[in-house]
Amino acid sequence: MKFGGTSMAGMERIRNVALRVKHEVGLGNEVAVVVSAMAGETDRLVGFCKEASPLYDEAEYDVVVASGEQVTSGLLAMTLKAIGVDARSWLGWQLPIRTVEAHSKARIDDIETQALLQAMAAGQVAVIPGFQGQMADGRVSTLGRGGSDTSAVAIAAAVKAERCDIYTDVDGVYTTDPRIVSRARKLNKVTYEEMLELASVGSKVLQTRSVALAMKEKVRVQVLSSFEQPGNDPEPGTMIVSEEEIEESDMERQLITGIAHDKNEAKIIVTRVPDKPGAVASIFLPLAEASINVDMIIQNDSKDNAETDVTFTVPRADLARSVDILEARKESIGFRRIITDAEVAKISVVGVGMRSHAGVAALMFKTLADRGINIEAISTSEIKVSVLIDEDETELAVRVLHTAYGLDGDQPAG
Ligand code: ADP
Ligand code: ASP
Ligand code: MG
Image (cartoon, rainbow, N blue to C red; front, side, top):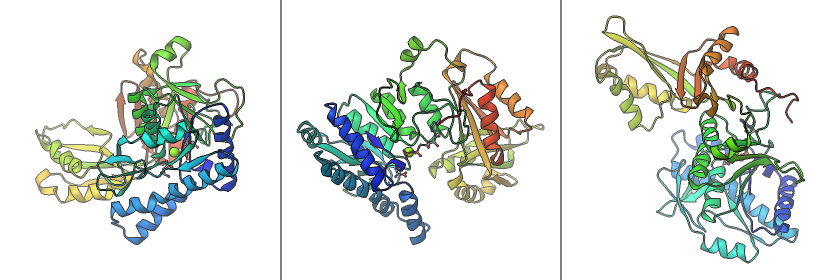
């Protein structure tokens, strides 16, 4: 069972979580619980780090931000004991949860489960702070924002759990963010592949890595609300399943499964780049070396075979650094100037149905055009079409696309 920040925000909510855990224990299950920091706490701690130093040390950042989950894991273990459920907390370094690569965005390499399994078999609930792990040198690490989802899936895989239930502040995965479209519909099932694509293009209900890991380790993940009482509904949330499981049970699949938006990208246009082999590489290699993830890329055809513009997107947080890196190489790359725009949003439609149907992209472009929304860049994958638009038009675009693909439910969500 994993409980997100909203579910852990304050003692009253932690008591509610404890009752849910008690309910699962009462059903005869051995339970491990992964908890997030209280809502807003990680942001607060990140703020302190930035105040301490704009170029803070990332290992120390991990020490600071991992503390939010330490607090909630201790509080939940105490609360469980107070209602007669045996429990203890297990910090990342105590298990340990071994991580590799970079501080502040570490990857889980391996989890030691022996002590955990023993305690659980003896009837003790294990309460594990999400988001945190330990580097090979013993230092605390964190898994990137939203990383508690990944902690939960990794622990579920390591202890070979029957299920990984992700409790959050909505009762499942919807056709789009229900906070934007009130007629978004809850999906009873969604495939790993679609969920992975949805998460990676901005549906923050699950961290992308957690979905990739669940897919690889075949963990049965369910997303459900921590605010609803456990009832008799056989499909209370959303199950993430393999494609075969959906095809068998759900013949009437929609062409599009979901729509996501992402306001975390920024656009860069590099003008008048020489149109010759190696020019594009000279732009993207230094960005790659700086670990900057480039997403959408457009290179116009040059009319005179001499110069062309190259447009691409980077994470908004990396915009200034990207421009610095390119400006420093202005002469060797040979461009005229750099134009940037941080007020953009990426809107994506996702669905396995588009593999076998033409016209998905065309409908997207026409729907946006009818509303006068200009498309600045496009990218596609087998099961996704993304467009870049003006940030101010995000909500409108998501809403009109939701209607155009027939996703609107009869009743407002919630
Ligand atoms: P937690 O703190 O439990 O990890 P998050 O805030 O990380 O919760 O994720 C839950 C939020 O994800 C919801 O409140 C919702 O606004 C947002 N969200 C975005 N896209 C979707 C979607 N397609 N379905 C459900 N929720 C979504
Ligand atoms: N507390 C961390 C964050 O806010 C991890 C999480 O909640 O998943 O990013
Ligand atoms: Mg989250």
